[in-house]
Amino acid sequence: LGYVCPLTENDEPQYCVLTDVNPNFGITNFDNFPAALLTIFECITLEGWADVMYMAQDAVSQWMWIYFVSLIWFGSFFAVNLFLAVLYLRFKQSQEVSAEEEIGLVEASRPAVSPDGDVPVVSGPALWRSLRRWCYALQAHRHFEVVTMVVIII
Image (tube, rainbow, N blue to C red):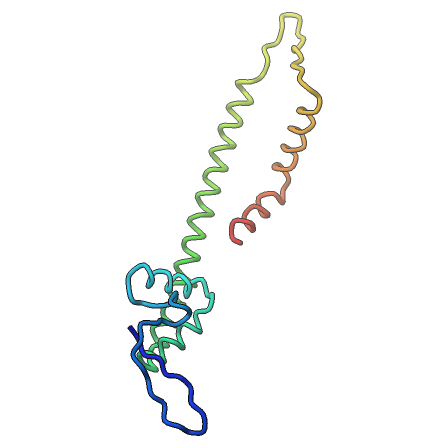
């Protein structure tokens, strides 16, 4: 439930009517826990938070800006960056583990040297070898990690 105050013309008195319609087509509200979480998520992602703040100021008090500015400072600038930092550290740890496993696989996959000193040649379809070589060169490139992190952050 909330109040809707329609605009009037020519200095006519404005009458607010109690209604069950929430602002923003009923999406932005603090009526229940899931809707409040969605509204807070909308604010900490900095997507339309000013509109939500102005609606809350109109509905409750002019001092609602203190809550929203605190939410932006803590939720957006601190908590989201903390989440991204943890995500980045996990990504780096998994890369290190993958590199260690790859070293172990390379050592295990080396072909045994025959008694005469020749290394047996493992052959496969030329297309797959060239594709694997291209994929390896792509992921081994020095900019691959940076591009991957930018895609994750976006």
